[in-house]
Image 1 (cartoon, helix red, strand yellow):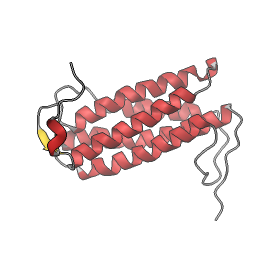
Image 2 (cartoon, one colour):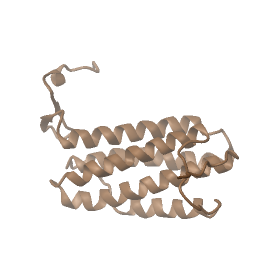
Image 3 (cartoon, helix red, strand yellow):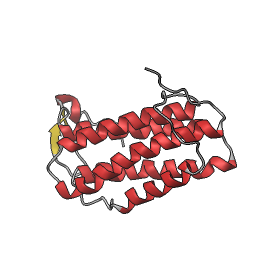
Image 4 (cartoon, one colour):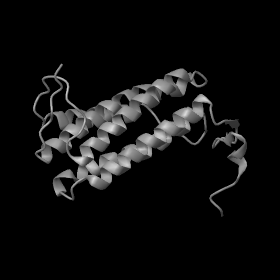
Length: 178
């Protein structure tokens, strides 16, 4: 099977449901930003030190990458998605466990530090954009009620995970100063 179909050359694309839409539609924008976020997480995974203590975080990020495909399927109103609000609760649990190991935050910090941390900050900002675009979609309110809290919590998770990798790598966070 060839990777290219030439069907998108006219400015339209087919969604997994088979529906054809303009490449400038909000659903395509949302799916694209989710893909960008997923790719940034993939970069972060590749940069995580091969340390046994960090392997559980690597597995969490891989789970999140899979979840993002489910989020996309839910946004697109397909019967393929099994995404539910339990995924948001799972993120909250992971956040709480990571925060127990971190020094308390006293203000804003600049994105960066360890390369894995910097990639997670990029993923966090892309996740925030995906959330903003998803808020603009009103076709599937039931799916959005599950997805929007997840995206909100995912950006929190990515922030705390970026701090976690800086902490484990002994990279100092740089506070923002006005």
